[in-house]
Amino acid sequence: MGSKKEIALQVNISTQELWEEMLSSKGLTVVDVYQGWCGPCKPVVSLFQKMRIEVGLDLLHFALAEADCLDVLERYRGRCEPTFLFYAGGELVAVVRGANAPLLQRTILDQLEAEKKVLAEGRERRVIKDEALSDEDEHSSHEKDDGEDEDVVSAEKTCTLAIIKPDAVVHGKTDEIIMKIQEAGFDILTDEERTLTEAEMRLFYDRRAGEEAFEKLVHHMCSGPSHLLILTRTEGVEDVVTAWRTLMGPCDPEVARREQPDSLRARYGTEMPFNAVHGSQDREDASRELALLFPGFKFSDEVPEAPRGKSPRRTGLHETCRE
Image 1 (tube, rainbow, N blue to C red):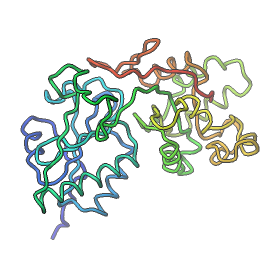
Image 2 (cartoon, rainbow, N blue to C red):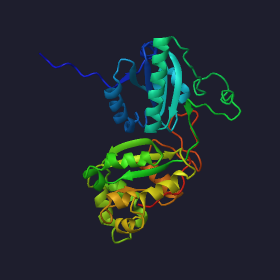
Image 3 (cartoon, rainbow, N blue to C red):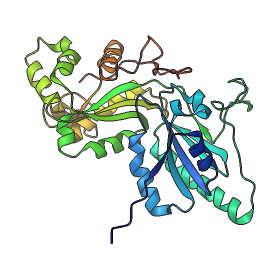
Image 4 (tube, rainbow, N blue to C red):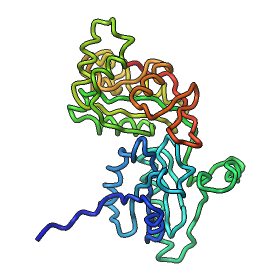
Protein backbone atom coordinates (compact mmCIF):
# COMPACT_ATOMS: atom_id res chain seq x y z
CA MET A 1 0.00 0.00 0.00
CA GLY A 2 1.39 3.40 -0.94
CA SER A 3 1.94 6.06 1.67
CA LYS A 4 -0.61 8.81 2.13
CA LYS A 5 0.12 11.81 -0.08
CA GLU A 6 1.26 14.84 1.88
CA ILE A 7 -1.06 17.85 1.76
CA ALA A 8 0.58 20.89 0.19
CA LEU A 9 1.34 23.64 2.68
CA GLN A 10 0.12 26.45 0.39
CA VAL A 11 -2.61 25.97 -2.22
CA ASN A 12 -1.89 27.77 -5.49
CA ILE A 13 -4.83 29.97 -6.55
CA SER A 14 -4.50 30.58 -10.29
CA THR A 15 -8.11 31.07 -11.43
CA GLN A 16 -11.19 32.99 -10.33
CA GLU A 17 -12.92 29.68 -9.58
CA LEU A 18 -10.15 28.68 -7.18
CA TRP A 19 -10.33 32.14 -5.58
CA GLU A 20 -14.07 31.69 -4.97
CA GLU A 21 -13.40 28.23 -3.56
CA MET A 22 -10.83 29.73 -1.17
CA LEU A 23 -13.36 32.32 0.00
CA SER A 24 -15.82 29.56 0.87
CA SER A 25 -13.32 27.70 3.07
CA LYS A 26 -14.19 27.32 6.73
CA GLY A 27 -11.78 29.03 9.11
CA LEU A 28 -8.92 31.43 8.37
CA THR A 29 -6.99 31.52 5.09
CA VAL A 30 -3.70 33.42 4.72
CA VAL A 31 -3.01 34.34 1.10
CA ASP A 32 0.53 35.27 0.01
CA VAL A 33 -0.05 37.72 -2.87
CA TYR A 34 3.15 37.81 -4.91
CA GLN A 35 4.59 39.26 -8.13
CA GLY A 36 5.63 36.95 -10.95
CA TRP A 37 9.03 38.62 -11.26
CA CYS A 38 10.09 37.65 -7.73
CA GLY A 39 7.88 34.70 -6.78
CA PRO A 40 6.28 33.83 -3.41
CA CYS A 41 7.77 34.96 -0.11
CA LYS A 42 10.15 32.13 0.85
CA PRO A 43 11.35 33.46 4.24
CA VAL A 44 7.93 32.85 5.86
CA VAL A 45 7.49 29.24 4.70
CA SER A 46 9.25 27.85 7.78
CA LEU A 47 6.90 29.90 9.99
CA PHE A 48 3.86 28.52 8.17
CA GLN A 49 5.20 24.97 8.49
CA LYS A 50 5.69 25.47 12.21
CA MET A 51 2.18 26.86 12.65
CA ARG A 52 0.66 24.02 10.64
CA ILE A 53 2.22 21.58 13.12
CA GLU A 54 1.25 23.59 16.21
CA VAL A 55 -2.22 24.71 15.17
CA GLY A 56 -3.26 22.14 12.57
CA LEU A 57 -5.10 22.74 9.31
CA ASP A 58 -8.72 22.24 10.37
CA LEU A 59 -9.34 25.99 10.59
CA LEU A 60 -6.04 27.42 9.29
CA HIS A 61 -5.20 27.40 5.59
CA PHE A 62 -2.38 28.91 3.51
CA ALA A 63 -2.55 29.89 -0.15
CA LEU A 64 -0.51 31.53 -2.92
CA ALA A 65 -1.87 33.95 -5.52
CA GLU A 66 0.07 35.72 -8.28
CA ALA A 67 -1.28 39.25 -8.63
CA ASP A 68 -1.05 39.20 -12.44
CA CYS A 69 -3.23 36.10 -12.72
CA LEU A 70 -6.36 37.33 -10.92
CA ASP A 71 -8.44 40.40 -11.75
CA VAL A 72 -9.44 40.81 -8.11
CA LEU A 73 -5.77 41.43 -7.27
CA GLU A 74 -5.17 43.93 -10.08
CA ARG A 75 -4.37 46.81 -7.74
CA TYR A 76 -1.74 44.72 -5.98
CA ARG A 77 0.29 44.42 -9.17
CA GLY A 78 3.73 46.03 -9.14
CA ARG A 79 4.03 46.10 -5.35
CA CYS A 80 7.62 45.72 -4.17
CA GLU A 81 6.80 44.09 -0.84
CA PRO A 82 5.08 40.82 0.09
CA THR A 83 1.40 41.18 0.95
CA PHE A 84 -0.54 38.70 3.08
CA LEU A 85 -4.35 38.83 2.97
CA PHE A 86 -6.35 37.18 5.75
CA TYR A 87 -9.81 35.87 4.81
CA ALA A 88 -12.51 34.38 7.03
CA GLY A 89 -16.08 33.65 6.01
CA GLY A 90 -15.33 35.03 2.57
CA GLU A 91 -14.40 38.43 4.03
CA LEU A 92 -11.10 40.27 4.41
CA VAL A 93 -10.24 40.50 8.11
CA ALA A 94 -6.58 41.58 8.14
CA VAL A 95 -3.65 42.57 5.93
CA VAL A 96 0.08 42.33 6.68
CA ARG A 97 2.61 43.90 4.35
CA GLY A 98 6.24 42.82 4.50
CA ALA A 99 7.88 39.54 5.56
CA ASN A 100 7.75 40.37 9.25
CA ALA A 101 7.62 36.91 10.83
CA PRO A 102 6.73 37.97 14.42
CA LEU A 103 3.93 40.22 13.15
CA LEU A 104 2.63 37.51 10.83
CA GLN A 105 2.59 34.94 13.62
CA ARG A 106 0.81 37.30 16.00
CA THR A 107 -1.77 38.26 13.38
CA ILE A 108 -2.44 34.63 12.46
CA LEU A 109 -2.98 33.64 16.09
CA ASP A 110 -5.15 36.68 16.82
CA GLN A 111 -7.34 36.24 13.74
CA LEU A 112 -7.62 32.48 14.23
CA GLU A 113 -8.79 32.99 17.80
CA ALA A 114 -11.29 35.61 16.64
CA GLU A 115 -12.66 33.29 13.95
CA LYS A 116 -13.04 30.44 16.45
CA LYS A 117 -15.22 32.73 18.57
CA VAL A 118 -17.28 33.65 15.50
CA LEU A 119 -17.89 29.99 14.70
CA ALA A 120 -18.39 28.72 18.26
CA GLU A 121 -20.14 31.65 19.93
CA GLY A 122 -21.74 33.49 17.03
CA ARG A 123 -19.71 36.63 17.59
CA GLU A 124 -19.68 39.29 14.91
CA ARG A 125 -16.79 38.99 12.48
CA ARG A 126 -14.72 42.16 12.17
CA VAL A 127 -14.33 42.92 8.46
CA ILE A 128 -11.91 45.48 7.01
CA LYS A 129 -11.52 47.16 3.63
CA ASP A 130 -8.04 47.30 2.14
CA GLU A 131 -7.51 50.44 0.07
CA ALA A 132 -5.64 48.44 -2.57
CA LEU A 133 -8.78 46.43 -3.38
CA SER A 134 -11.29 49.20 -2.80
CA ASP A 135 -12.99 50.91 -5.73
CA GLU A 136 -12.93 54.12 -3.74
CA ASP A 137 -10.28 56.81 -4.10
CA GLU A 138 -6.95 55.70 -2.64
CA HIS A 139 -7.11 58.32 0.08
CA SER A 140 -10.76 57.92 1.06
CA SER A 141 -10.07 54.62 2.80
CA HIS A 142 -8.15 56.42 5.56
CA GLU A 143 -11.20 57.42 7.59
CA LYS A 144 -9.46 57.72 10.93
CA ASP A 145 -7.92 61.03 11.90
CA ASP A 146 -4.46 59.57 12.19
CA GLY A 147 -4.89 57.22 9.23
CA GLU A 148 -4.28 54.22 11.48
CA ASP A 149 -5.80 50.76 11.20
CA GLU A 150 -4.39 48.12 13.48
CA ASP A 151 -5.24 45.33 11.02
CA VAL A 152 -3.61 46.95 7.98
CA VAL A 153 0.15 47.02 8.46
CA SER A 154 2.11 49.13 5.99
CA ALA A 155 4.66 51.90 5.74
CA GLU A 156 6.57 53.77 3.10
CA LYS A 157 9.97 52.17 2.95
CA THR A 158 13.43 52.41 1.52
CA CYS A 159 15.12 49.23 0.36
CA THR A 160 18.66 47.94 0.00
CA LEU A 161 20.59 44.93 -1.26
CA ALA A 162 22.00 42.24 1.01
CA ILE A 163 23.97 39.15 -0.02
CA ILE A 164 24.66 36.17 2.20
CA LYS A 165 27.98 35.06 0.72
CA PRO A 166 29.02 31.51 -0.24
CA ASP A 167 31.22 31.08 2.86
CA ALA A 168 28.21 31.56 5.14
CA VAL A 169 25.92 29.45 2.94
CA VAL A 170 28.32 26.49 2.72
CA HIS A 171 28.69 26.43 6.51
CA GLY A 172 24.92 26.26 6.95
CA LYS A 173 24.52 29.73 8.46
CA THR A 174 21.86 31.07 6.07
CA ASP A 175 18.85 30.41 8.31
CA GLU A 176 20.63 31.86 11.35
CA ILE A 177 21.57 35.02 9.47
CA ILE A 178 18.05 35.43 8.08
CA MET A 179 16.66 35.01 11.59
CA LYS A 180 19.06 37.68 12.89
CA ILE A 181 17.99 40.00 10.06
CA GLN A 182 14.30 39.55 10.89
CA GLU A 183 14.89 39.87 14.63
CA ALA A 184 16.63 43.19 13.95
CA GLY A 185 13.40 44.54 12.45
CA PHE A 186 14.05 44.08 8.73
CA ASP A 187 11.45 42.90 6.23
CA ILE A 188 12.76 40.64 3.46
CA LEU A 189 11.09 41.51 0.17
CA THR A 190 13.03 38.94 -1.86
CA ASP A 191 15.23 35.98 -0.89
CA GLU A 192 16.74 34.19 -3.88
CA GLU A 193 19.40 31.48 -3.77
CA ARG A 194 21.68 31.74 -6.77
CA THR A 195 25.20 30.78 -7.85
CA LEU A 196 26.63 33.97 -9.29
CA THR A 197 28.68 33.82 -12.49
CA GLU A 198 32.20 35.11 -13.02
CA ALA A 199 30.93 37.60 -15.61
CA GLU A 200 28.35 38.95 -13.15
CA MET A 201 30.92 39.34 -10.38
CA ARG A 202 33.53 41.02 -12.58
CA LEU A 203 30.91 43.58 -13.54
CA PHE A 204 29.57 43.75 -9.99
CA TYR A 205 33.02 44.57 -8.55
CA ASP A 206 34.43 46.38 -11.60
CA ARG A 207 35.34 49.45 -9.53
CA ARG A 208 37.72 47.26 -7.52
CA ALA A 209 39.39 45.69 -10.55
CA GLY A 210 42.74 47.32 -9.73
CA GLU A 211 42.89 45.97 -6.18
CA GLU A 212 45.18 43.09 -5.27
CA ALA A 213 42.32 41.06 -3.77
CA PHE A 214 40.02 41.48 -6.80
CA GLU A 215 40.57 38.02 -8.33
CA LYS A 216 40.23 36.30 -4.96
CA LEU A 217 36.99 38.16 -4.28
CA VAL A 218 35.49 37.29 -7.67
CA HIS A 219 36.51 33.63 -7.30
CA HIS A 220 34.97 33.45 -3.83
CA MET A 221 31.66 34.98 -4.89
CA CYS A 222 31.38 32.40 -7.72
CA SER A 223 32.45 29.44 -5.58
CA GLY A 224 28.96 28.37 -4.52
CA PRO A 225 25.39 29.50 -3.89
CA SER A 226 24.68 32.91 -2.37
CA HIS A 227 21.41 34.27 -1.01
CA LEU A 228 20.36 37.58 -2.58
CA LEU A 229 17.96 39.65 -0.47
CA ILE A 230 16.16 42.96 -0.89
CA LEU A 231 15.59 44.43 2.56
CA THR A 232 13.24 47.05 3.96
CA ARG A 233 12.63 48.17 7.50
CA THR A 234 9.47 49.33 9.30
CA GLU A 235 10.53 49.16 12.96
CA GLY A 236 12.41 51.91 14.79
CA VAL A 237 13.54 55.32 13.62
CA GLU A 238 16.79 54.21 12.00
CA ASP A 239 16.61 53.93 8.20
CA VAL A 240 17.24 50.59 6.51
CA VAL A 241 20.63 51.59 5.12
CA THR A 242 22.11 52.71 8.44
CA ALA A 243 20.54 49.76 10.23
CA TRP A 244 21.96 47.24 7.75
CA ARG A 245 25.43 48.78 7.98
CA THR A 246 25.27 48.50 11.76
CA LEU A 247 24.04 44.91 11.71
CA MET A 248 26.76 43.82 9.24
CA GLY A 249 29.59 45.49 11.15
CA PRO A 250 33.09 46.36 9.83
CA CYS A 251 34.13 44.66 6.59
CA ASP A 252 37.09 42.83 8.17
CA PRO A 253 35.80 40.11 10.54
CA GLU A 254 38.84 40.56 12.82
CA VAL A 255 38.01 44.25 13.25
CA ALA A 256 34.33 43.40 13.64
CA ARG A 257 35.07 41.01 16.51
CA ARG A 258 37.00 43.74 18.32
CA GLU A 259 34.69 46.67 17.66
CA GLN A 260 31.22 45.14 17.12
CA PRO A 261 31.26 41.59 18.52
CA ASP A 262 27.51 41.16 18.03
CA SER A 263 27.57 42.09 14.32
CA LEU A 264 26.98 39.52 11.57
CA ARG A 265 30.54 39.71 10.30
CA ALA A 266 31.92 39.19 13.79
CA ARG A 267 29.68 36.15 14.32
CA TYR A 268 29.83 34.50 10.90
CA GLY A 269 32.88 35.92 9.07
CA THR A 270 36.37 34.40 9.27
CA GLU A 271 38.78 36.56 7.29
CA MET A 272 38.69 38.76 4.21
CA PRO A 273 36.97 38.21 1.82
CA PHE A 274 35.08 35.53 3.77
CA ASN A 275 33.04 38.02 5.79
CA ALA A 276 29.62 36.37 5.39
CA VAL A 277 27.52 39.27 4.07
CA HIS A 278 27.55 42.10 1.53
CA GLY A 279 25.92 45.51 1.26
CA SER A 280 26.37 48.28 -1.32
CA GLN A 281 28.82 51.13 -0.79
CA ASP A 282 26.49 54.02 -1.65
CA ARG A 283 23.23 54.94 -3.33
CA GLU A 284 24.69 54.82 -6.82
CA ASP A 285 26.21 51.38 -6.22
CA ALA A 286 22.95 50.11 -4.73
CA SER A 287 20.99 51.07 -7.83
CA ARG A 288 23.65 49.61 -10.12
CA GLU A 289 24.05 46.35 -8.18
CA LEU A 290 20.34 45.71 -7.80
CA ALA A 291 19.76 46.46 -11.48
CA LEU A 292 22.50 43.94 -12.32
CA LEU A 293 21.31 41.15 -10.02
CA PHE A 294 17.56 41.80 -10.37
CA PRO A 295 17.14 42.92 -14.00
CA GLY A 296 13.35 42.69 -13.70
CA PHE A 297 13.46 45.44 -11.10
CA LYS A 298 13.51 49.00 -12.51
CA PHE A 299 14.98 51.96 -10.69
CA SER A 300 14.72 55.73 -10.85
CA ASP A 301 16.41 58.20 -8.51
CA GLU A 302 13.66 57.82 -5.93
CA VAL A 303 11.26 55.05 -6.90
CA PRO A 304 12.23 51.53 -8.01
CA GLU A 305 9.38 49.90 -9.91
CA ALA A 306 8.48 46.30 -10.54
CA PRO A 307 7.71 45.49 -14.18
CA ARG A 308 4.08 45.78 -15.33
CA GLY A 309 3.24 47.59 -12.09
CA LYS A 310 0.60 50.31 -11.97
CA SER A 311 1.09 51.77 -8.51
CA PRO A 312 4.54 50.94 -7.06
CA ARG A 313 5.37 51.82 -3.49
CA ARG A 314 8.17 54.31 -2.83
CA THR A 315 11.27 52.29 -2.05
CA GLY A 316 14.16 54.56 -2.90
CA LEU A 317 17.67 53.16 -2.67
CA HIS A 318 20.15 54.90 -0.42
CA GLU A 319 23.68 54.35 0.82
CA THR A 320 24.55 50.96 2.30
CA CYS A 321 27.70 49.17 3.52
CA ARG A 322 30.36 48.10 1.08
CA GLU A 323 31.16 44.43 0.51
